[in-house]
Length: 351
Image (cartoon, rainbow, N blue to C red; front, side):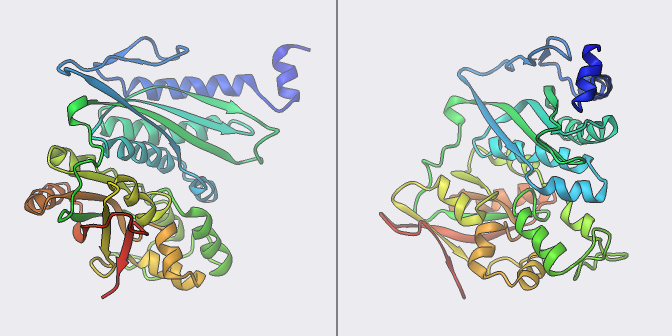
């Protein structure tokens, strides 16, 4: 028995993996920037740090898209989660003021299907090109003893760069600063375990059914369209004003309170005006359909706010203008107050 036959008997097909890698390599070549070095398909990806930095600092992050992949699998749509992964990662380093340089993806599955892997990486490559970032490499793993047939997991790592003295840490946040909320495009990549339970079990909707209260121009959106809406990148909205923001919080798992607290100095408290922005219909439907309390909604979902900037009152107008140019809606959603030892450090005020 040959090596390939032994692997095939164990559930791993080497020829399928080779075909998937060939397709992925073609997609990766289309993302190479002038900073890319080395060859596609090497053991490691290489990018050069751009010229012009006096003290360049690399900013790195690793994340996944969670159980949103289960929605993608049910819908048979796999490219959007790839783009989600890139945009999520870009936002995670954007909060430190970093410009993305390179990305690595990881796809693990029980049985590799080249067409599905290529769809996923098509989305990854699309996100990389949108941010002028090289897809420097990645990994595809066939793990039949670990993954249920037809399922896969998706994760990625990003590397960016920022001038050391321009990195954003939150240390400039001070009482009197305002909170500017940036509209999300839906659930983004968090809260899907609860959202799926509500939509598919409590509400008993199918993947192709109309989603309640979605009335854009034209027919209602389907469950798949609503739940697979792409995680918004805030790079275009924020890059022009990174020099004046005091802090940025990417609203991911943990919602507004779980992420805003990460950028607050010890002697401050963030007070969020709970009525300062409208909840998108999606979140109202989930709250009602799952009979979820308001506090749990705030801890699990972004509630329509995907990014929060903290800035001086005099700089808010510049932030709003930049977001408007990038077609991202914003609201002033609260303020920073003095609060040494305050608990919780992020609180909501109802009006």
